[in-house]
Each structure stands twice: as structure tokens, then as C-alpha cells.
Length: 379
Image (tube, rainbow, N blue to C red):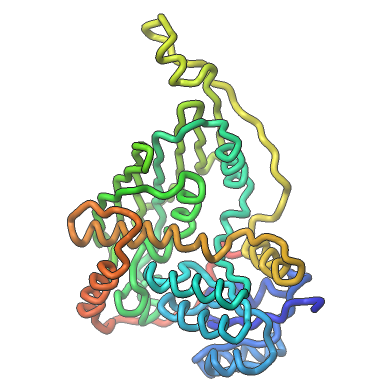
């Protein structure tokens, strides 16, 4: 195999982004597309000169693909992925990999059983700032983590939520800001700081006319006793994305100004015990690290996925790791809706029961102005 033959399942806004970038990936060849919208799939089939299928099963049974990118609404990710895996077809799923951790468990188990490659589209892992932050943590530069914080204040208009029948409904999407906008940030947060042991949260719908949450807040407790704070919203403009990870030897900050890694000399724990000064703190110094250069893009994740299939190279975002941010997301919703502290690992069945209750309250939208437009920030 010289190139991986890709099929794109779901050619809405995100799917069209994947179609556009396929030509830029030398290890990939677009060979098929699938969408339930007949007019759209025929137009795109003509544009990209590939066969188009009305159902994912037809595409998977066509013999035309070695791998698929799944860019459908969230609930469809697990059944499509599992069907593909059982046919020996590799799977790269858009985020989130599933709506519930229990469904994600089944995807991961099937990937292990069948031996196919399973990746998730967490393209922010390719950004240099976060790779440097991960290196700093792996090398112990900031020491034992004792505080974390994540602030994600983004914006989405009502028109965004009105653009499709499934958006922002419990029955169609399965969640709000935590399931749609926050997965990248939650993935980076858990990739760098690890998983908490306890979550105490609040979720609410503050600004939009939607069923699901547009704002979430959580207090986190980690296995070592460290504490964390998390806030996610789509009600803020101008937006902000800021992450802090503090240890007894230093601190990592990533925000709109870039990455700052600092090291305390001596470590905080040592200075606290040994210093005779009342008003002094440990001196700090900036830390400079290097990591290999790579473009920060969806295409980078797709290329690494193709090279994993062709040459056995490591994935940048393995599907097995996609479950972490989803488990944190599920825990925040469970805590907020039940009004209690939730312990991790998450009780899978308890969350399934909650989601079933929420889906039962879901109603068809009265106002839909259909749009299938690719996010202009996709690259």
C-alpha cells in the first residue's frame, strides 16, 4: 500500500473541511464519500471525482477504502466506527469520539479486538505550545502538580445553533459546550494534568435558546490532593483560552499570549522549609525547550494517522486517549444535573440513565435555518 484510501462519512461543515485537506496529504487518497443529503453528496462527488454513497454501510462494503474519517453528528460515531472496525477498516473519528463513556469503551474494545488503527481528531495536540508543555511535565520541570485551571470562554451565535435540527438537543447532539466546543481544551487539560478523582460541578443554559448547557463550571480534586478549577462557555466575546498547571518546582501557562514555562529556584517546597525571609518568594526563571517542528492542523493529525497505517508510526491522538476528556465531560454533566460530587472512574450506567432522562425531555426544534458551512478556522 503506497497511499491510504480514505472515505469521508458525513460531508457537512466539518466533513467538507476534511475533503478540502485530503489533497494536501501525500500519504492519503480520497476515494469515496457518504452523506444522507442526495443533492449535497452528488455535488461533492462531481467536485472531487469520487463515488458517493447514501449510507455508511454501502461505503464500507464498497471495497474502495482502507480508512474512514467519521464527521457525522456525535451519536453516530460509535456504531459507524464499530461497523468499520469489524470490516478491517481503520477509523479516524471527529471529536468527541462518542456521547457517553460507555459507548467509547465499546469503540476502544473493538479497535483492540480487530487490530485496526483508531484515532481521534484532536488537532490542537499538534500545536507547539502544548507539545512543549507536555515535554516540561514529562521531564519533571514543574515538579508535583498541586493546582490546575482551565478557562475556555468562546462564542457561538443563536444562528449557529439554529443551523441544524440536531444541534444543541439532548436527542440529536447529546450535550452542549462540553461535548461540542470544549473537547479540544478538555483533551489538552487531561493530557497535561491527568484525570481528577472527584468532580463537583454546575451546568446551565444562560444565553441561548437551546436544551443543552452553554456554560459549565467545575471544581476538581486529584488523586494526590491537588485541586483544579474549570470553566467552559460559549457566551463570551472576545474569547479566551487559558490553562495553568502549577507544581512545587514551577508553572506552565498557555493563553492567547503563548506559552510560559517557569522554574522556581529553589523549589517552593524547599524554600518554604529553609528560608528565613518573611517577605521573599523563591526566584523563578524561564525555561526554554525544543520539540520537532510540525504544522498545527487537522491535516497533521490525518497524516500521522495515515503513516500509522502505512509504517506503524505512533498516532498523535490515539482513540484510546479520546475517552479521557469525554469522561470528564460526562462527570461534569452528571455532577451538575444531580447536584452532587462525582467520583472517577465514572459510573457508566448512572450516566446512561441520566442521559436517557434528558433525551426523554428533548423536543423537535421550531426554528431551523439550515446551514452546512465549514468553520473558517479549520486548516
